[in-house]
Amino acid sequence: MADKKDVWKQTELFTKDATVESYVNGQLTSSLNGTKQIGEAFEAFLANFETVYHINGQHVVEINGNKAEGTLYCRVDLIGSENGKKINNASAVSYKDEYIFENGQWLIAKRTSTFVWNDRQELNQ
Image: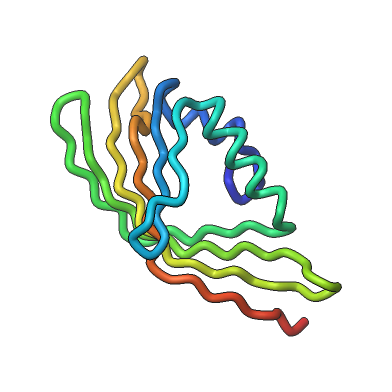
């Protein structure tokens, strides 16, 4: 959903009162509350890029009744144009999630995104 920039469909993966926090270099860079704020922020951010691509790696989840905690590792490539050139913004991200089983499905109640590294390079096409 994120790769198609269908952020409003993506927000359906979160509880209505979910929180999303993002950290870069150990510093809190954003704190979002509720699916409306999450969707608006995701939509505005992704509008900066023509291509969005996530490659998910390990996903470890520990389930305890109707709650769970998980860690997901991801490489994110965001490709945009600057001065007529294609620029790839690549990042390694770890997501620490808290899930809740609600209305027959698992939803994200809290997500903490930690951007481990970032690399910006011009694409040679």
